[in-house]
Length: 251
Image (cartoon, rainbow, N blue to C red; front, side):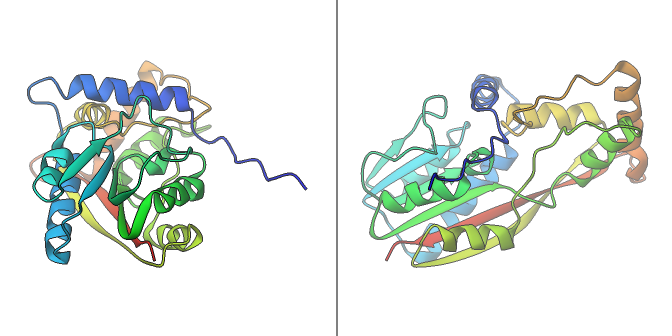
């Protein structure tokens, strides 16, 4: 019996290009980093709450470098994997007390396999903490993109993982015990273009294997107008980033 082929939803090439662009953007003063800053702060707070000080830690994702700074305060040794070279769907070299993945796991084609590799690379009692932007995020952007192409909308945003699905994935990966939760991060925007700029700066644009065609000038204008339909009295739209955090322990 042959193993079932993993559906190729995401493009590894586009994914690497997205990381490359984000890393370059983060060198620019004023580049948006609020999603990864929040993830890094949450990682630091949760480790402090658990009073967990790992001897060895592995960090994946995090184009801003903020999580590495946070981990350096608690871990004796921190190893960072290069998002341009690291393949989450392959085995990890080494054994770690903590593995933190920020904004990376949700756009691999074989999420269960990637989580299994994380578990296998943990020492007994080790912890994996996986953060990403999850389902329920960017509702206004989704609405605007649908309005841009009312007759035949293209797939312009990739599928996202919610808390319930994340919990099931951790169980499937064989973690001894696991916790899945989320929190909202709300940001106000006066224009659709600024939101798109922030997504590009933080490696949050879509990396679907079937890349959609560019929006026409007319469609883009419809999207801009639709985005502002829910603006408040100040002319700003509140967009929500739902940050999902999966935490698993190796028995």
